[in-house]
Image 1 (tube, rainbow, N blue to C red):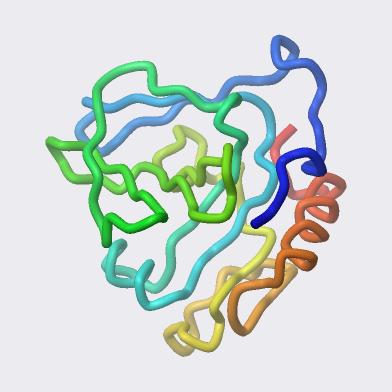
Image 2: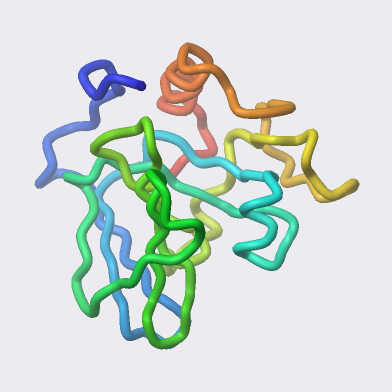
Length: 165
């Protein structure tokens, strides 16, 4: 399990820029504050099936920098230790609370109003990926990164020029 104490810190919460987002129908609305800890594309078969696409796009935030501002969510996916949250009306996959990353929430970046401001920094599970489906992310992993590699990615991402401010 990755420990919260060592994640890179942003400036004080009230000084952070807010980014809003919503599901396809708009019933569920959310907000995140500040830049994410990491952005990534996941090419695993599970994400391919849940998105009906080549990969999922993700922005990792601390739960303290995330809030629902309208609507309620329902659980979907496999409903195991990693919990996937969906809009009950349009069934958009909004966010995930990953097992092993306590206190974190992984937002689907297409749900954010300016998703183009959150390009993926890393690609995970490239070995399961659909040939030719690449994002142009600077970092690539054949599978999931180890805990040490993951922590290192968050440190690299904190200084990456492609991340939102």
